Length: 55
Image 1 (cartoon, one colour):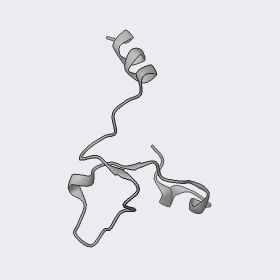
Image 2 (cartoon, helix red, strand yellow):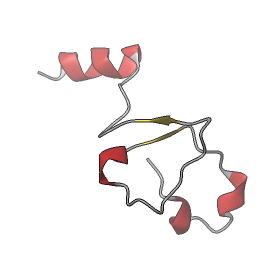
Image 3 (cartoon, helix red, strand yellow):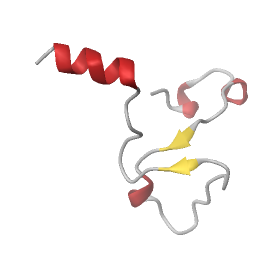
Image 4 (cartoon, helix red, strand yellow):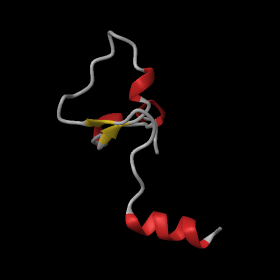
């Protein structure tokens, strides 16, 4: 995860989704094309496999 405000050129990055949507304030409107998750987006299969191997 990279916070856009930490980039030198934030317009060079395209958001894929919104995380922590449950904490959004009323006036913060997201792009309706983005999937909004209450907490985190689900991990992809490769990440899930790697995490399971670490247990």
